[in-house]
Length: 104
Image 1 (cartoon, rainbow, N blue to C red):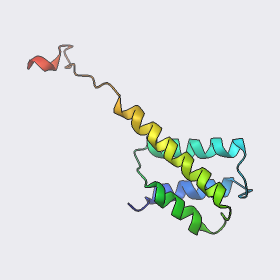
Image 2 (cartoon, rainbow, N blue to C red; image 1 turned 90 degrees about the horizontal axis):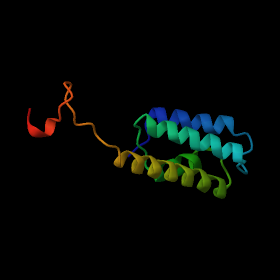
Image 3 (spheres, rainbow, N blue to C red; image 1 turned 120 degrees about the horizontal axis):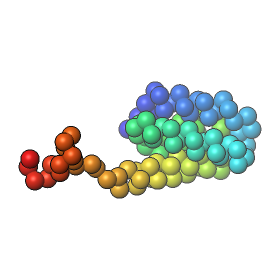
Image 4 (tube, rainbow, N blue to C red; image 1 turned 135 degrees about the vertical axis):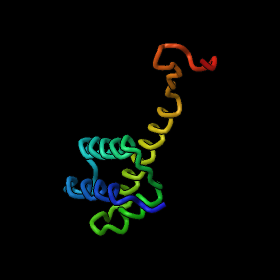
């Protein structure tokens, strides 16, 4: 699945905000986690391989270990988000407070 334009914009923000692309500081990692968390919360889906490809082809990311760390963060964040959503409880009460399961 190709990356959405809104996701590419966020990847460009990561590229702009991280000055030293040869290593990630803990602050950089926190920034990357937050960006991917926001992408997931907006309901945007991405293929982790597409994220990796984007960073490899972007031009300023030359250290494979740094790219892989960002890809791993994106995968972890997406997996964590999907697991959290899987276990959300759905409210099945009607507007009048009765349970809708009995057909009333």
